[in-house]
Image (cartoon, one colour):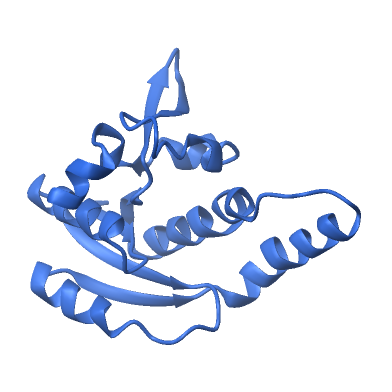
Length: 167
């Protein structure tokens, strides 16, 4: 596998700063926009990727998102529980699709703009809180499988949101 990274690009500042930081670290960055909902195209993605000199792929994950997140949310809610759709999405859709794209492209690393740290300890990989206690997103990634964590990069875990906005 080559020294490349698949970066999930939502269109927001966090994912683009992630792509920029990884590009500055010498990675060949491949941007992937996961279309999870029937919303309109985001033309700024094309422009920003062109400006950063990175490839942009679009991946349709709407059916998987509906089955794994929306349907589960509706079922749980109808039974009086209050599920967290972001945790469901990260654990069963977003990271899995990014890993699938990376595997298809023979790319080792996968990255997102989450404010977390992913660290090894005693031969295992764990999601840990990021530097920004206010923006920490470790709760949303609690169920991401270790086989994925060992391939993941989350550079924003070392920064605060204020620092990222300045970048």
